[in-house]
Structure formats: C-alpha cells, structure tokens
Amino acid sequence: MKKRRGARSSERLIFDKYDLYLRAVQSPDNDVEFLFDTYKDLRKKKPSTLREDFCGTFSICAEWAKLKPGNRAWGVDLDQEPIAYGHKHTLPALTSEQRSRVTILRENVLSSGVPQVDIVVAMNFSYFIFKQRLLLKQYFRSAYRGLQKDGVFIMDCFGGQLCQEANEERRKIENFYYYWDQKSYNPVTAEAKFAIHFKRPGENKRNNVFTYDWRMWGIAELRDILKEVGFTKSVVYWEETGRDGEGNGIFKKTEKGDDSEAWVAYIAALK
Image 1 (spheres, rainbow, N blue to C red):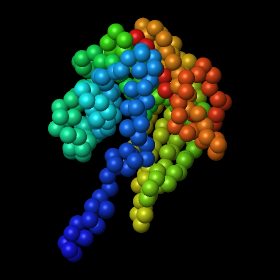
Image 2 (cartoon, rainbow, N blue to C red; image 1 turned 45 degrees about the vertical axis):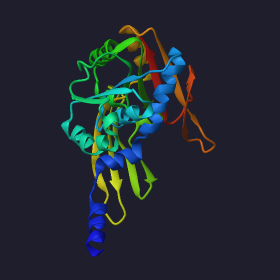
Image 3 (tube, rainbow, N blue to C red; image 1 turned 180 degrees about the vertical axis):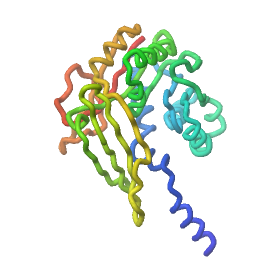
Image 4 (cartoon, one colour; image 1 turned 90 degrees about the vertical axis):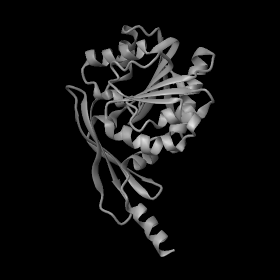
C-alpha cells in the first residue's frame, strides 16, 4: 500500500503542460458539437469528415471520431512534440475502431495533402501566426482547396480593447491557476506577444510555458481575404454575455458585435 501511495504522489508532481492547457483553454467535446451543428445549420445536412489544422495534441480530431460512428478526422501540424504527446495520451483514450478513423500528419497546413473534407477548422487563433497578408491568404486558399463542394471552413478569432495593451488575466481552474499574459502590442503592425503561465499549489509560478508571437487580425479583414480566395459567403458567430458581463460560451450569428473590452467569435466560410 505504501508503494502505491508513493506512486500516486509522484504522478501528482509531474508537470504536464499539455494536460493543463487542455483543462484551462480547450473544451474539445463542446467544440466538435459546435462544428457539427454549425455545418448542419449552414448546409442542411450532417458532416462526417474534418481536417484540424495546427492540431497540436489533436483533441478535436479525437472528439470528432467519438461524436458519430463513421466520422473521420485528419490532424495537421508541424510540431513533433505535441503530436507525440497526442499519440501517447489522446489516441489511447479512443477505442481501436475510433483510432482507425483518425489520421495525424506532420505536414505544413499550407500544403497538407489531406483528402477533401466537409469541415476544415483552425482553432485557438493558431493562424494568427501568419503575419503577412499574402501568407494568410495562401493558408485560406489551402483551406478552400481542402474542402468538398459543400464544405465549410471554421475558425475562431478574438480582439477588443484589452488586446491593444499589455495586461495579464488570472483564473482559477480546478486546483491550479492559469495566466493569460499579453506582453506587448504594436499598433503600427498589429503584432502582439502573449504567454501562458501556470501555478500549482505548493509550487512556484511557471512562466512562459506557452508563448505566442501573433498578428491581431480583425474580422472585417479576415472576411475580405476569405472572399478573395473564393469563399462564397462568411458568417460570424459572436459570443453572448451572461449576467456577469462575461462570455457565456454561447455563439449566435450576427452582423453586429458588441463594443467589448475583449471578445471571442467564430467565422464560418462557405465554399
């Protein structure tokens, strides 16, 4: 018994940055339901195939395979570390049959070679890494080519006044603290640098566990580029606010957003 207690104690000491990120930032089960429902609302039929760009540990791919029998998912990312983590932790949570419907490729999202799918998705603002308009346009063109005739490209975005100044947000997540730190913003180039820190009980704060060097793209310019590469229409889903004035995780179609200090939205582009 003492040996088993010691093993559990050792497990608690392991710092698993991807697990903390998943618990603090992601909700892949809710994400795939939103993707499924959005496609069905826009196309009046059910999707079955999905490509997750910048997939990291590919939790969305896994949840997509779990959502409906027959669903297929492809994940694309260049970074070997999160892909290796996903193979060790994400895939084992699936049944063997579900795993057979998930394919992970270490490829460039600009030219991934994935078969055409119903939905291409870019989550967690990952495409903000493309700072030049021509490069972002190249990525959107890749997403367009990767879709079937009735395909939909879905991505999230964020902005607001708080994204134009240095600031830090702290939130309690279960038994640890999560920090979203905006380190800088350049109004001339719209470039901004961010970091994620974590603090667990009895430990020092772990700084810069994840870092990001992005361009803050606005909804209007994103929709302009989507139109330029051939998408016939784009729809904005704006996060509603609860009684506390904070986002409540419910997204509704709109052509008018709130003048919020910070906002999150989705853009769905129809091929």
